[in-house]
Amino acid sequence: VQLQASGGGLVQAGGSLRLSCVSSKNTVDINYMAWYRQAPGTARELVAGDAVKGRFTFSRDNSKNTVYLQMNDLTPKDTAVYYCYARDRGTDYWGEGTQVTVSS
Image (cartoon, rainbow, N blue to C red; front, side):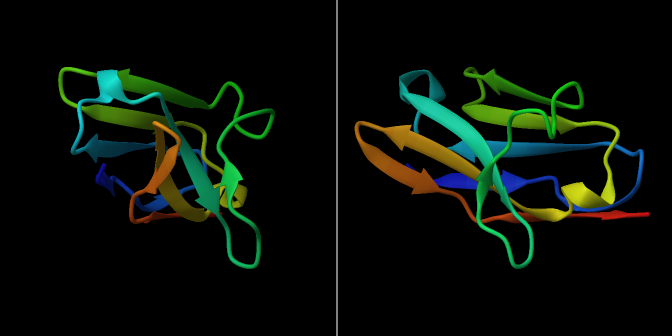
């Protein structure tokens, strides 16, 4: 499975971005997909939980083999490299990261 992420960039605090991740395999056949992020000097973390609740939305369009991460009300704490992830038949796959930078 190859994953190609895009959509990162520089945005002001309070702004929005939508990340896209296109899969080489039909996403309907992939067990699990998610987004991770890694800020400088920190461990890679799953994009989920209280830190993004109510602001970020994960979605999947199987007709396009694409998953999305809609990010609203961005803050400087969201600055990180964002990675698309897939787990399929016991194997982990990572896309190249896309940089998201939020200025204050």
